[in-house]
Length: 314
Image 1: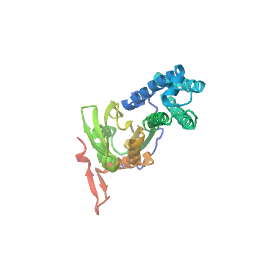
Image 2: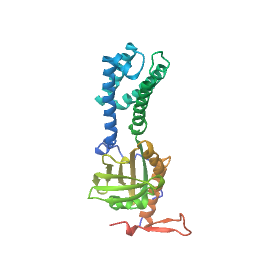
Image 3: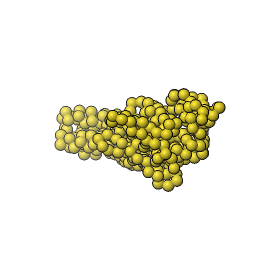
Image 4: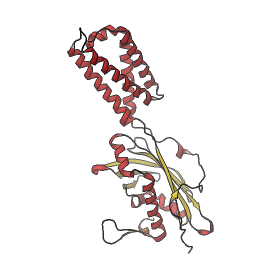
């Protein structure tokens, strides 16, 4: 039996060439609620903008503010421009963020209106509450629902096993929780789809479905999350036989689209501040399991607990 290759886990090496395929397509789009909220804000901007442009005096009387016709028409033009930009769906995030700045201007003007001689405080207070509500929605979209910057990383390891055996192990994706501590379970739905559950803070979980996009025995395995996943991501495993029977070079590449808010915090809990470190640990466990047949763990117990390879291979 050839001696185990001693190379440790390292950052991506030129063992693997660039590859263009469906695995490099954009990640699953954000949740439908994000698009619905953006559309609602866009139509609101259009309606308010037209009202300010066409009926500035009537709007001023309705909210109890002084009749500053030119100012209201200028605000209306700004609202109308933002609404059209949102609805056209170009750089939607930037247009919604511009609404946040506009909301602050509106609130400042309403505050100043309270000091006007003909002001009607009750109507102004109601208008201020309404603007605060819309501002909250704009901020919600901008901070919690806006598209995040994907996090991408990869690691490689040399394992003294044939490429076909490594592919067989990784293809049986229900093995993954044995190696990745953040995964609670992976359940097979059919030959290409599976349901993943991951641990999150405060005893909660994140769930998503995954579909296999490429499956080349002994060479490559790629997958991606489906639409509306709690944690949108994609990943791939590439296998390259090493010279002189020294085993196989295995490279894992991952890309996550971490959401904001509570789920974003859960992402940090799942993978830590340096996701590459977690992946490196998982690959060390994989190397140990496939080369020795078991994983020894002493965490939380006086003696090592072992996970046997024979229980993980079909």
